[in-house]
Length: 327
Image 1: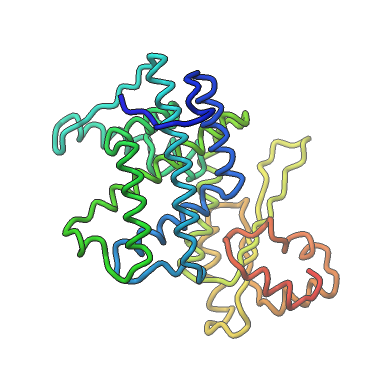
Image 2 (image 1 turned 120 degrees about the vertical axis):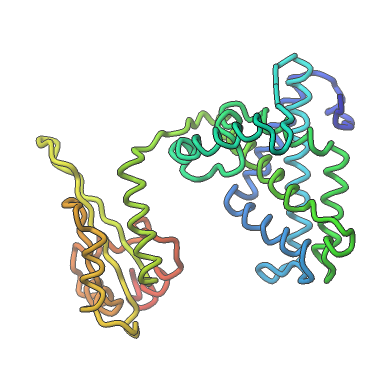
């Protein structure tokens, strides 16, 4: 059994100390960053390692050194957690399935069947773990260390830094390209510690009302794909407690004033998206009209056009803020 080479207080040998050290490392990690941000950095890191373009994300190549330290903390924390689990005799049965075997094909099918449940439980935050691994993250950690040992991961990160800061692709230099697999394994570790961190904080997963929320998200994504709007504000109107009516929603779709299509062209297509849903109303607006409504103090737009109601992640709210001066 491989264990981390620990020194000083980490060498006390107690399971409690190892668990405390692991949780401290995880807490330090999430104090400095979050899952979505480090996921973006890791993807940029992979591109730099496997291409001839050195890391330049946000104009700061030193980010790779910071990311290396973050990943080293997570790898160390996961190795400590796995050591404790193995010392305590916890059953972590991870099958090493052969490619194209019936068992592997069935596992793939089960993963596809569980995708919607994973999305439902975790809101799209979990992409690399199976449903079973989300319920027992140590299974994912075991899978990662079955592929590469602790010392191997240190060497891998060193290589990533070397090639990530150079103009040479590691794939050309070594004649191999295992980095895609390594990337997915690192992302698996990140998701595992994310779930462990939430569990330590007492944050359970919240099962969503899939039909309603997925439909809302799907409509917004379709609108984005079809029109590429500047902003979409989603306003939810709760139904009165005394009635059995369902709540309804407004989608305010905002286009730049210099948009090439006329609003008469947009409106019929927009209405198609809400057809058959009597509780959804879509409307089309120019940015200057929103600006005018806000500056004139129209209450509805003042309440509707806020950052928390943005249906698409965009920096365009800054445009509205600058245009209005105080909104």
